[in-house]
Image (tube, rainbow, N blue to C red):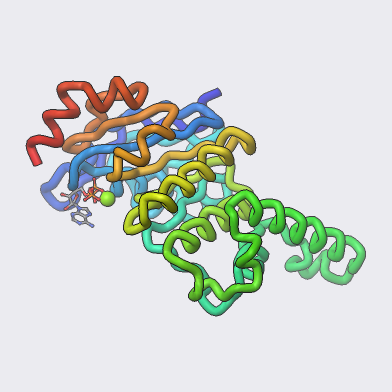
Amino acid sequence: MVILSVSGITKHFGGLTVLDGVDMEIEQGKLYQLIGPNGSGKTTLINVISGLLKPDGGKIVFDGTDITSKGLFDTYKTGLVRTWQIPQPFSTLTTMENFLISANSNSGESFLVAPLKSKWTNDEEEITDKAMQIMEMVNLTEQKQTASKNLSGGQQKLLELGRAMMSGASMILMDEPIAGVNPTLAHQIFEKISNICKKQKITFLIVEHRLDIALQYADYVFAMNQGKIIVQGSSDEVIKHPKVVESYMGK
Ligand SMILES: Nc1ncnc2c1ncn2[C@@H]1O[C@H](COP(=O)(O)OP(=O)(O)OP(=O)(O)O)[C@@H](O)[C@H]1O
Ligand SMILES: [Mg+2]
């Protein structure tokens, strides 16, 4: 099933065409990667899909909803969630607290339901259980009571991933999740992402530069150059494709 469909997306900055008619079809429950040389438009495309930037033309449909002109928050509410390149968790809160505030279905926050304590308590228990499960999936159980500012860089990225899952995301966008992370931890992060993708049927679209580490985890790869998808297919097909090789050599 196609969960995200991007068609004919264009974006200009002043006189510069940064996205030049991008088309993508993304199926549910797969791990997609978006690669391409510096300045090819990858971050801009993620910004446009997540609603941070509005496209100048084209259409984006997520899970049956036209999200082309929706902003970041309305897009987030449809289940399409972006994690940040530089993790910005609430730094004095613990891992557990960060997880709990990311849950988007806490009816205790609604003044109509708040007086009904039993309903509220049930939700609290459910959310705590969900937080424990997700914490285990992203390997942060031991850091449950650690303030997020004391987590390592890699652990903060796992925290961001966990928070996106807590929000009930059905698709997660990530821009360079392993930038600055040592190779061992980088592989662990991609293994976690891959497991979550397969077991929870969450769809991922990930921009990554460290192809030697990242590509082996991809189900499907899009290669961009100068604002266009130039090649797409399996990791092997894409990385060996002359157009892709040439695009990297030009830089
Ligand atoms: N807000 C902006 N205003 C003007 N130009 C911009 C803006 N954001 C990006 N650009 C330009 O758009 C082009 C694409 O940038 P983008 O950040 O999307 O590339 P990228 O593929 O993510 O690159 P990298 O691999 O270096 O992260 C670049 O030429 C960049 O300078
Ligand atoms: Mg970028």
